[in-house]
Image (tube, rainbow, N blue to C red; front, side, top):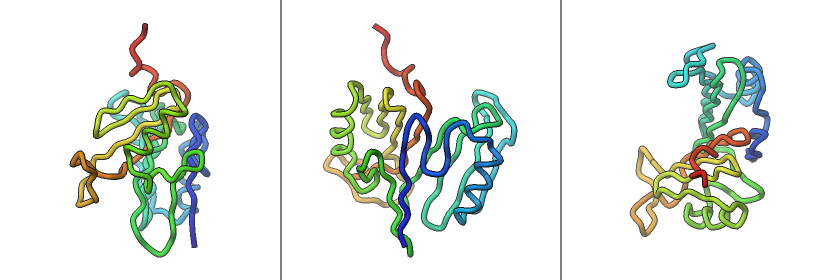
Length: 167
């Protein structure tokens, strides 16, 4: 069995459109066979806001509900090995099986701005944010950092635009 999770910023990810009600996110995650954990239900504080985490034996998705009511961003973590073939794609590219530096080169072809900070990378105009931070042993690239990204966040239009220097 295989599952494809498509990243479609600024609209969301497969099955989870940005702007969906938090309750709908919880129900859909449960339908995917995930254990659902809700943190700070209804909270809309800029530092501590509502999150819905979908925990599956092979993957984890953190749904950010920054207004305390609706899905504002989705953060997908690298799938773990198991009985299913799980692939996370952005415009046909396998996000977690393409080496991080090669993926960034591909994203540079799509966007005028890629902010590469070694462990974190942001593509403001595509509303994507990536991390190479890993909490366990993973293959390393020649720069000593994880070879593959470990998580990707998909946000609405303009989500990372504040990071681009105004000029």
